[in-house]
Length: 626
Ligand SMILES: Cc1ncc(COP(=O)(O)O)c(C=O)c1O
Image (cartoon, rainbow, N blue to C red; front, side):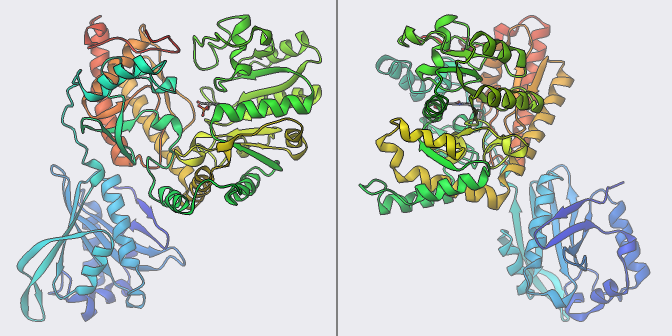
């Protein structure tokens, strides 16, 4: 039995028709000469009984989906659209449209109905191609299909009967481009341009590049393509012309709309034409400040920078200036600056549990020892202990709101209470969590207000921009301390951020990435269950993280990355889901991930996992590159 599926659109919805939907009005459409002349069933006069039989037979048939088209406003049934004669093996089907209610002709409803049915056919029914044959005399219908993105592919000679003659039908079709993934195995070429460039880079750039998380060693030593020529949506073109689908860190979470988003790039190009640097300030800076204050109603002032870590350093400086106290209690990852790394001066493992293990702090002044003290998420007693051991000295509490662990509101509220009691400035670092499950910081979804929140990464969809958003009286302290930089004034970051936020609002991006992330997590959980692998999924809905609990987690991770790369995917144990990760791409990834994880499970059972490695094991944290 089919469930009565509903497909929702802006003006219409589609629902599978049942016998109950067949009424006199419906039968009258079918008998109307303007409509009847284009129907397959044009030969006979329609009756309620006959149409009911037809609708029932369609409903009972697994190869046909006859949808009624209903107006959202008022629920009026205005026509039908049928995904028919489904060929399951080749994933083809026919599409037939009938707008029976002549009062709504030429209102664009046909195009919308085709788009909705196509979405259902490609997404839910997983079909790859829809074809429609349109009577050559039915120019209106042809236009409607073309508007819906179909293309003309040929003509059936003498296929339709019209006004007593056989006439041609134009054939239009649409393919599910999402499922066209280049699946040819990309055998890793160890002498590829990317790998040799990376080896050269390590000799002239300490650490090879500017971000630990983009080192080839963090993914697949000696095999990772390392450099890109072009990136668009979720597609990445390597230096040797290999195309990959990015199912990993997506520019380390900076591109929620997908790479090289057309409209963000368009506003950036306009800014470039108009000049991005000047003696005078760009007005977009004020517009963005206003927008961020609107998104965080508790806040009253904003400062901007370009990177997340520097924005955290600004926030900590403002916090210290406001509270008049030096010491910082922190939880989570907040960048590379002295105030943060100094935590490892007292104990080299102080930062290990926060995100990145092994962070070395050579060069950080020893005088900072004991000034930044970590506590773990959810462990309020650790914060209490810090406060009691450093009586009257903690001026700033900075923390991530949600990362690996689900948001713990009770804990956050306790931290808020403690910060207020001791006169410390509470900073929520939402550089990674912002613009992932709400527009702005995650905390805006809950009844909890920090004194400052820090945003970065996704804010400019790949263009550098970060923000320190805070309560007015706290932010005023920035006037008493020197915080200033040339390139915090350039225009691109501001216009990119304004357009990014506009798109988040217009396209309901948050809901899309949350759903897509949940779909990925559910698929992966099924794979782990059926393969018996001990891997758990944690993290924000739109950033699923696989926590590998097998004996050699880094070997499992490396083999997964290695085998997925051969299948055309940049893959890791973290997926930063974007608006450009279509359902088709997610399903193609899950299909390949299932094959790879089953191979891994079988090798583990035989005790031969390490034999699958074709190079070195990936790094799990910070290491000196030799
Ligand atoms: C929570 C958090 N804060 C700060 C940073 C540092 O941001 P950036 O790398 O842009 O300096 C990061 C980066 O991953 C982060 O996740």
